[in-house]
Amino acid sequence: MMKNIIKAGVLMCTGMMLLTACNKYLEVDPDNRTTLDTPDKVAQMLTSAYPASDYICFSESMSDNAGDRGHSGDQYSGDLLVNINAYKFIDYASTNPGSPDVYWQGCYQAIAAANQALDAINKAANQTAYKSYKGEALLARAYAHFMLVTFFSKTYDPATAANDPGIPYVLAPEKTINPAYERKTVKYVYEMIEKDLAEGLPLIDNSAYKVPSFHFNKAAANAFAARFYLFKKDYAKALTYSSQVFPGNNFKDNLRPLNTTLSTATRAERKAAFTSPDSKSNLLLATTGSTWARAWLGYQYGLNEAIAGNVFYSGNITKGSLAYNIFYYGSNNNDRGIEKWLENFVYTGPDIGNPYIYVPLFTAEEVLFNHAEASARTGDFNTAMADLNIYYSTRVVSYDPAFNGITLDKVTAYYNKAADPLGATVQAILDVRRSEFMQEGMRWMDILRNKLPLTHIDDKGAVINISADDPRKVLQIPQEAQANGLAPNSR
Image 1: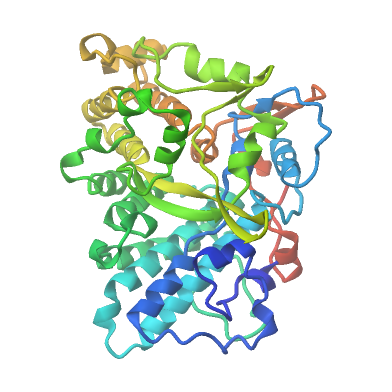
Image 2: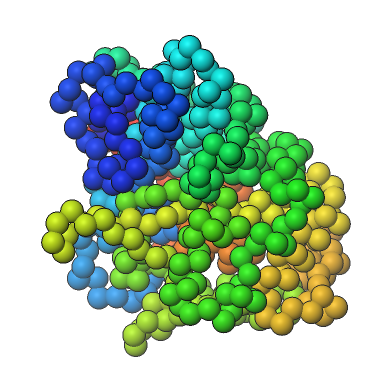
């Protein structure tokens, strides 16, 4: 697949055009490209520097947020197969939305756009005018590579990263039809991500963007850095960057108001608010060609009655009720869901077109969780507790700090870990992350980073045990990429 996806883009495939695949790169000489000779043209190219595909279906399906819903199983086609195969940890090739192959392609298309922008910037006579766009291109390139190495390589471990196979880190536009690529190591990929982060972040200028939430603005850039360093286990830096997202760590005013404003909103209003660029919570949004908003309800494996009960209704540290709206559909109590997603549609003809959704790549909630965890892992449990109390103050119905407020003693008692305050605090953070990011695909990243085991039971009763270091947690390199010389992952 590499020959089709790591292409600089013969045409300027920007914005919505990527939703129609922009898949004819090789029909024209690769150097016959749109000339990027002004800051405005570079800015336009950078609208394509974000993955135009989503990871939600496959990552949510692999996680412990998915269970059998008791469907008849007579619709095993298209994107439904993505859900089924991911849940069963079966390697498969797919061109359907939400599949690993399509996400791989979307990331490398984004990298190609970022590299083409950087190439034009580096050749410009007056590079000062391009400063903010260079920062955005570097951050976008780093982000796409980070997501690829997260899903298609072993999770970063300082003891093994120098030997674990990474993914190709592409640094320049392609000049030939089939250039050779190599995977190198996870350590190398992380070094390159860190290099792009360090160079790009200081260049970001929010004033360059009409709608900052669709670009790597300063808050989003720092949020990305915090996530990266949490994965790298450099908790001091994760704390530093998560502390720079909001002045004075003002998380409260930037979290989604679930137990106040949104508690009285209609279902349509909640959907619209979740991915609105006007929401303070949404630090970075990406436009992705996706059927997730319409398809998740019909999947064989997803949020069901048992999982919803365990995550949302079995009690929590605050002893209060959580303000999440969990719906079930039709007569099947196993079809549970949170209505977060509003589908958009681009018509290409009468009654036909391409569905897409806005995906929050970084949110205020994630920054708060990263700040809390980094604080705890660097020994500051007071700050971690303060962060969790801020979060719960926006999620517990009729929140009363005197009754619902938590302390380290309450956390260690709740998890029966009096001798392990760090373990208890991290577990508390993982639990709120799981409920907050339900049906967003983020839980899988927590499972990877924390080496959590999980068990799936399919519709036939077969038990699938995935251990902490199970090689099936690493997505297989797409078959077309293997055909072009990339070594597969060991299974």
